[in-house]
Amino acid sequence: MTPERTAGVELPIEAVRPVRPGRWLGAAVALLFLVWLAYTIIVNENLHWDVIVAYLADGRILGGLWVTIQLTVLSMAIGLALGVLAAVMQLSDNPVLRGTSALYTWFFRGTPLLVQLIFWFNIGLVFPTFAIGVPFGGPKLIEWQANAVITPFTAALLGLAINEGAYMAEIVRAGIRSVDPGQREAAESLGMSHRQVLRRVVLPQAMRVIIPPTGNQFISMLKTTSMVSVIAGAELLTVAQRIYLGNFEVIAMLVVASIWYLVLTTIASVGQHFVEKRFERGHVRLSSRVRRNLSPLPSKEPLPSKAPLSPEEPS
Image 1 (cartoon, rainbow, N blue to C red):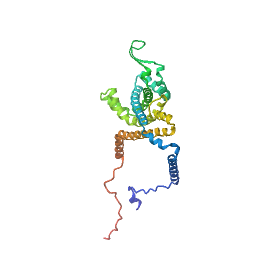
Image 2 (cartoon, rainbow, N blue to C red):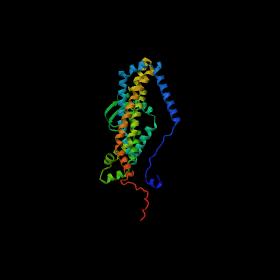
Image 3 (cartoon, rainbow, N blue to C red):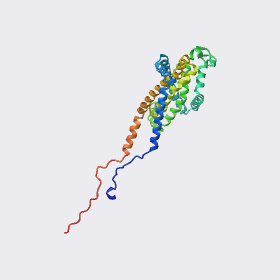
Image 4 (tube, helix red, strand yellow):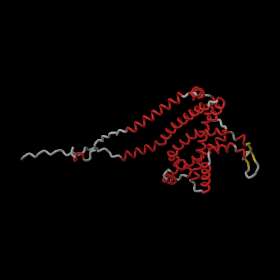
């Protein structure tokens, strides 16, 4: 075919994938290592697999698992609410609100969570009673003893939720800033109030940016609840510790707790995947539509070809 006939015609590309022996060698080494590791764990008699299987569905372990789920869900719900409030305050034009939000995120992100849990558990040493009444030394209407109110579960919930709210504030703030300011201006031009703009226009569009890191925080919270063991909580790791203090099966009980943590994080990861797909649906449709409109349309007319001219007949 001559260059004149191939002009404007897209020729097929015959791509040949290059051979990469180093990649196959690395895959073989990795597979061999995984097989060796699995074999070593399975045949190791010191792990006491019979004890692990016996305690996987133990009532005490399942009770601690339920407390872990409760702490995770409640802490994330309260932390998300605090994060949205702190993010809105940080984006406010009022310097007092901005300063309060910045102080909150600075303090609770800057101190270790373990210290916060221990502090909330021992808050009765600072405030022996909690009361509702007139402030600054006025009469008290209702009063509670701190030691009766701040149980290990309550202290764990306060520590986890307030700490999580500081991190969620930055995530929500980044999501709100990702929305085009023109969206807010267009909504305000329609007569919407600031609250309506935030609830109907900004936050729904910011969710696409907020959801992935929030899912990561939820998965991290499932494992972070194990810190509650330092204040004698009743979550999964604490229950496992109480059991191995009685039967001295330390490694076996830690493996039982680890298996349940893996189950919880796997379920949360699958849920995060489907939630992200749900909020990405409109964006993916728009992107595919734009790519389809930008792609060249196939020509309906056949390309002109130069046929060889026949010799002229003598007149």
